[in-house]
Length: 270
Ligand SMILES: NC(=O)c1ccc[n+]([C@@H]2O[C@H](COP(=O)([O-])OP(=O)(O)OC[C@H]3O[C@@H](n4cnc5c(N)ncnc54)[C@H](OP(=O)(O)O)[C@@H]3O)[C@@H](O)[C@H]2O)c1
Image 1 (cartoon, helix red, strand yellow):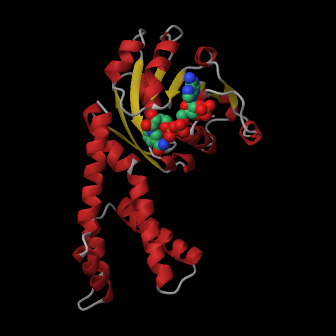
Image 2 (tube, protein in one colour):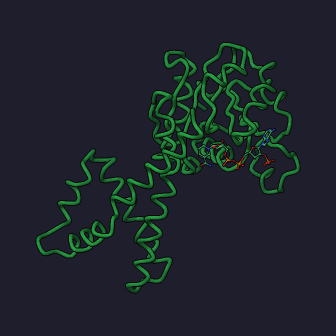
Image 3 (cartoon, helix red, strand yellow):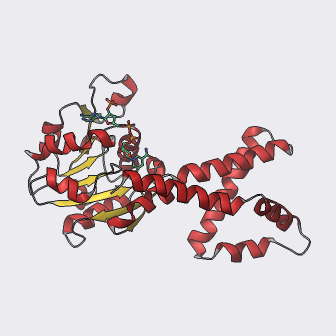
């Protein structure tokens, strides 16, 4: 166990993203389930959730009292009542990370009276397998607790510290982005099935090819077009397929989709 993370964590809101964070932390081997308390609206949970070894409760107050790091992952419409509910038991020992879309750090500070390190994190669901892209903004990037917060998300994938003004952009590109890339892999495997592969083989080829493409950029820090140039030969079959996709608006559709998600995120984020 890393000494920095002898701290106990409460995840308020053990839904999709809250549970993904909890499972990712345990898979990092830096945390055992006993270090994580998960709160939900209902304490009446399916048996398989209890079997994972986490502590579940519907008592946010006592869970916060037992912890040092608070992660809030509830739906936006519940966020204010949660922040106000826990405010009376938040002390200087705590730091708080909000995953909630659409609630600014200033608005959180208005609810939480103690002056503590507050961060907004925008991960994606690959956090479950420790492959998230997480963008993080904070009210105090120099406080030691913020370093702990970055270290924590570093265990769960890549992290990038951003200004809060970029949180809507992070939502569109990183959080929504996982769906865009999943859809592109699905489209590739549908094409693969049409040209002869069984669905599961087509998906394996498409997913591993997408993973390889991403790793080329991440490991070699190369530019996508440089890597594309290496596989496009004169009169070749790759350039024929690529240009056909572009004639049908591939890049344009992707860019427009990201901008549309950003536009929607702007309406919800502040
Ligand atoms: N999903 C993503 O990829 C993603 C990415 C980035 C940010 N976010 C943000 O993360 C937040 C959560 O999203 P989600 O998809 O995980 O939602 P979700 O699956 O609906 O989870 C919300 C959880 O909050 C719990 N909850 C409700 N009231 C509560 C209360 N009073 N005290 C404690 N827990 C309570 C619910 O409990 P029950 O299960 O008992 O109803 C549920 O487990 C949202 O603000 C979303 O915008 C999500």
